[in-house]
Length: 140
Figure 1: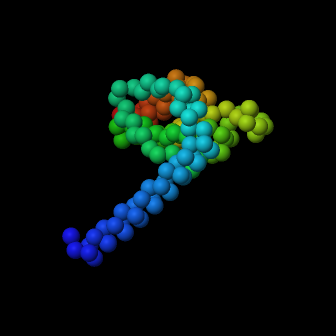
Figure 2: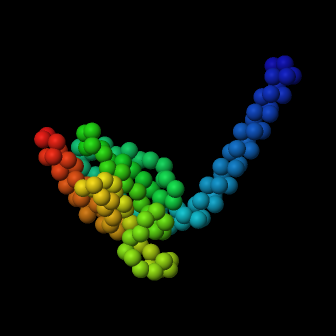
Figure 3: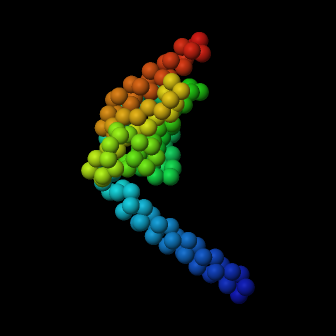
């Protein structure tokens, strides 16, 4: 490799290293701020119906987790809000001990549905009912 190409290569490696370090630092800060360690253990397992396709998505804004469930061409978007920062669930104080992590699903009968993080059975049942309602409405 000639000297110019070698220098260009070394510069690109340095730049990539800087971006990588910056991403690691940002990720470490987010890990702390969004209590990812806590949620790794607290988010319950979810049993999805076998006919659904579920696409995991990166969290958006301050969501802890996010997915979209598909039943045929129909979809429902769901995210987990751990801190009442994207919406408000269970009106009350905003003291940390009063905040309940919750799932938010959209769109359920044209509205937003919310339930406690641990109420995954309710979440799935509401989503099943919504998919069924849509199929019935569309005459399928």
